[in-house]
Amino acid sequence: MKHLIIGAGPAGVIAAETLRKSDPDAEIAIIGDEPEPPYSRMAIPYYLIENVDESGTYLRDPKAHFKAQNIEVVQQRVDKVDTGKKNVTLADGKTRDFDKLLIATGSHPISPPIPGLDLPQVHSCWTLEDARNIARLAQSGSNVVLIGAGFIGCIILEALVKRGVNLTVIETGNRMVPRMLDDKAGGLLESWCKQQGIGVHTSCSVESVTAADGDQVEVALSDGGNLSAALVITATGVKANLDLLDGTGIDTDFGVLVNKRMQSSDENVYAAGDVAQGVDFSTGNQEVQAIQPTATDHGRIAALNMAGKGDEHQGTLNMNVLDTVGLVSCSFGLWMGVDGGDSAELYNADEYQYINLQFDGETLVGASSVGKTQHIGVLRGLIESRIELGDWKQKLMADPTLIMDAYIACTQELGYA
Image (cartoon, rainbow, N blue to C red; front, side, top):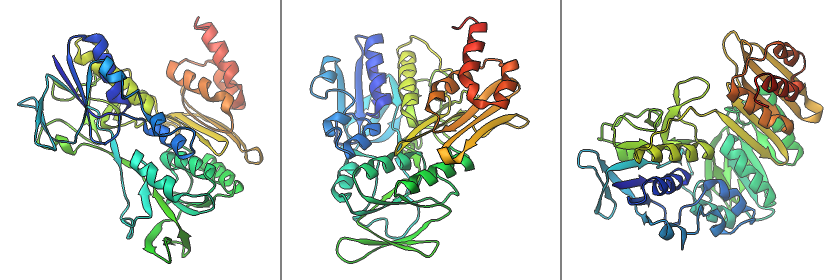
């Protein structure tokens, strides 16, 4: 059996290792289009603050691990997938055959249509090469402009602050992390960042970036302001890498549409990670969940099914956890609520504390929190368990901080604890 994996990130690596355990005699190859060993993008912030060197971002020891596992790693771009011939064509013109194919190509940054983003002082923060450029330009005391205060932007923000730069963040939304936090929570995060000396402009956009004196650039803002910077970083969202599937007939939307076995509309082709549009735990709809835990889970389940072992994905819970210069925020599930549902909240702006609970009937279906780290695991547990809260719903409506008490009481009643 020939198993081919396109994508050398966490989904691809976990899939390859799972395949080796499940199918010891199979031919397994990972094809990645970067000139690096398989690495984790989530480790890039640690590289930027010099907690690890480049080798610390690697998912496995590239000199020994893959050879010991008898997994071939190919550093080439895949230009074409032919599902009829069951092969792929590489950038060098060579082809590779497969019996089962896993698409784990991840995603790429989206650049907004702003003049000047092609200047050498402007970079995204997505690859190790991006990180090298940022580390070179983001020197202590230098002015840095970060375009985008979403989840990825706020992860980068933490590393930039620790490098000692003078940071200004520009966000077109009316709050920070608008796809993760509501107005109150996002507002708390903005206030906290400003207190830490970070410039934050919400409801604002970058109009242009132009070359200025020396190695500086001038950043023009929609509110009429201008900023001088040694480095501009764009963090304005990502898009799944689907182009190589053009002409294959495989069903796609925002990602590759997959069933619970991570199988695409072609029975021999699977997808995992940022490129896969799989089942959402809360809604049952097909969604792209671009987080590393989902990628590894996808990779494992896809591999088991490629090897004929059979397993089903039960759905990904929408979850995000951020530590932004010491302030932890999170959201889980349907944090924005459901039609006809009840909600409860606690808001203490002076202490940078907030918790919001969202109910559907007597079940907790979503939650968000700022500055309340003790609740994070419990919030996720209650949502994923779909426990009927009974009398505890009203207690939580009156005091959302009783979430731990509710969890213990309800799980003990059901014999979980």
